Length: 195
Image (cartoon, rainbow, N blue to C red; front, side, top):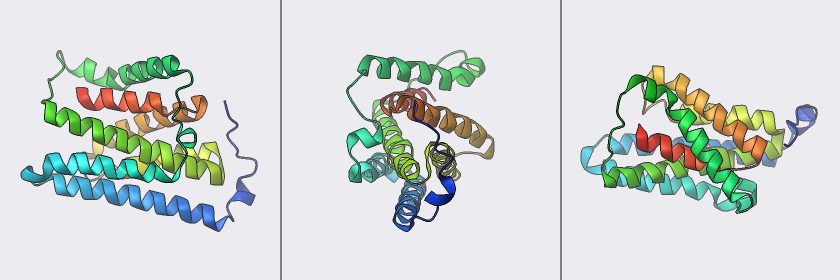
């Protein structure tokens, strides 16, 4: 587990290139999320907007090495098992409310997977890495979660935002503690396919 990095926070705040990168990534992630949501409001554009939006969010990770994003094949079994467990935790509220899991049509399943992967690469991959490099792990956990929740403001009712905050924090803490993005990607896919 890496240190949270709060001790050096005051001296790190003055780094302009790091701040600019974080602000650019946050603005791009929010802009892409909101554009995807607004485009998907037109029924004929919904499926393409979801897929293209997910791919565009994934592209935000292109400026980072896979290792920086938390993507690695090392301990892959642990990462996959972690994703399944995290996915089950994210689904607990749904299991309590429903007696059966709905079947999602295959085209929407592909779109849900594209969005899940894109959001994880953008928010807990690229944005998390940029904030962590600039300010440390604790601000990366909180900051990536806040931007993730802001990205869902247009697409979900206000009562969902508390659940999005909890999910974002859970996945960001895993990202930090295990230096892993594979499990959050898998968990997010599981949750989005079941919701």
